[in-house]
Length: 422
Ligand SMILES: Cc1ncc(COP(=O)(O)O)c(C=O)c1O
Image 1 (cartoon, protein in one colour):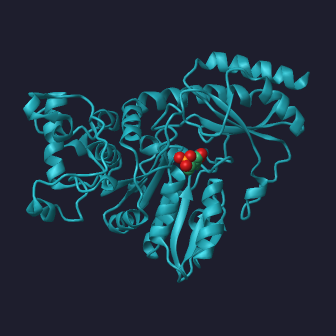
Image 2 (image 1 turned 60 degrees about the vertical axis):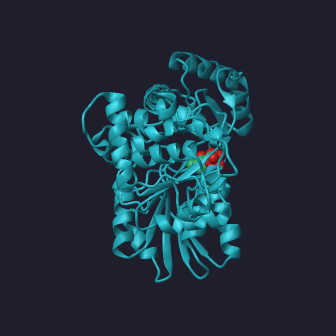
Image 3 (image 1 turned 45 degrees about the vertical axis):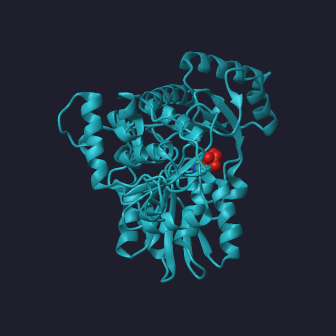
């Protein structure tokens, strides 16, 4: 699924000529916003010479059964193909187009595998790279179901997990054992938004022969090119910003050439497959990711700055704010910000937080973030931290800032503070 090949480079050049009117520019030199528009639109997936032309988007190819011309054709396809029709589970051009586009966004990537959810992608990656007796270093601020997989299935299979402080930086070296095979990162962390020193960690991991895997859902490759920072496998919940419309679920793993065969083989063994209809939705989302991220980021910062000046607010957990403890590393490594962050309500109890959240009218109460609409949820990280305790007594709130006008969102939050006090 979605593997980079010399052949593909040729097709991409053809596409660029067709779409952008340029001559023989290599797609690797293009900027990300351009790649988002062009990625995966190979002529053989968007055009049929018998019809005399092509269409803009790869059509939805639904298939379980693939028909062969004859037995020689059946034998020639072989089991190992990934961008030739072989069996429905191995994908069709709609699926390959999405995988291809995601691979193109990540310089240094060999290919991308797609999964029915972000959780499925994380679990498949961990299963592919770890064996009984191995040791895993897992960031303490990982998304809760990632922890649940380590404490549940990985523990049952004899993989030991040590949780580490997200701010460990170069100190990760002290935690590596002879049997450590993988360091898992998520930056900024779920709920508490710690920014990890990924270049320091990946440099040590590479020197010690340990693989690294990153949950890059918050930033996407637009804001943080993971492989360029030394990460071996980068994961995204496409459900969030890539889909962007709160109506489809999917996850992806994009990997270096060294790790790719292991991931692909494990995914095939696990029978992971995604719907071409959902891939078409993800491709639609991908085309506008750059402009949406700019708006999410700008509006998020406007709201975060406004909150930081409010007496009702204790701390704003947003790495793009200069006062945030992760700001220096964020400014060094990231090219922008998304719209997801948290803040504490100073000196109030949980009932006040409930009054605040319940009174908001422009923020839906919901978990799966990254859509066009703003969301709010209460967050309680204390019970899911074991290496870096969450000691804030004040209640925490998480906001996902959507594409509404930030002024309307701020007015809503102001009404919320009034309701909280009243
Ligand atoms: C950081 C992060 N990773 C992974 C996931 C899981 O993604 P999905 O909902 O697609 O399974 C989420 C979902 O909220 C998330 O926030």
